[in-house]
Amino acid sequence: MSFFTSLDTSASALTAQRLRMDIISQNMANSDTTRTEDGTPYKRKTVIFEEISNRPVFADYLDKAMYSKAGYGVRVSRIVDDNTPGSITYDPTHPDADENGYITNSNVNIVEEMVNMISASRSYEANLTAISTTKAMINKTLEIGK
Image 1 (tube, rainbow, N blue to C red):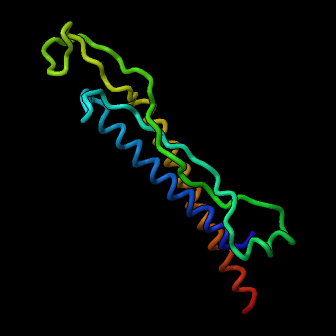
Image 2: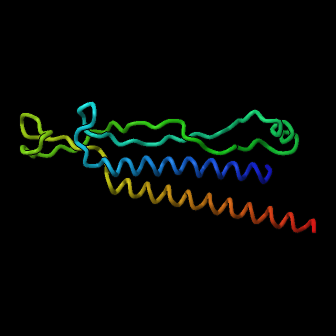
Image 3: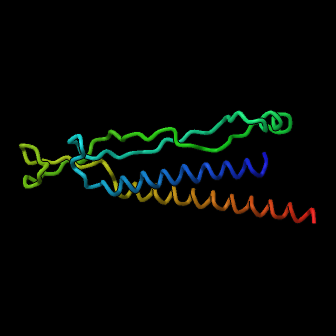
């Protein structure tokens, strides 16, 4: 695994975690939305990651002779809706209340979203640290040649 491969791996994780943070922010912003364009309450979205396992580049053929197969990072494979039902509250004055006076809220749990946001933030910070460490190793390697 070269220095550049480790930078690519960390960069892919930074991109994936940034998108995860965007989706978490969207969930939190819409936690009180009881009616979307299709007339239903907002559904929480989650990000599904997958490993980037193979990239057909020439370096792969050279690395096979020297190293065992390693992953190349992570990417977002899809964003899916969470179909768990939202809570139901009684509020006959609400414009989205049904004929019995009940409204269906979104299924976003703010506490869960905050935990996910902390997790994504820590993951992002860990990958920034990995990039900084790789840069330091590159600099030390270049100093050897002086």
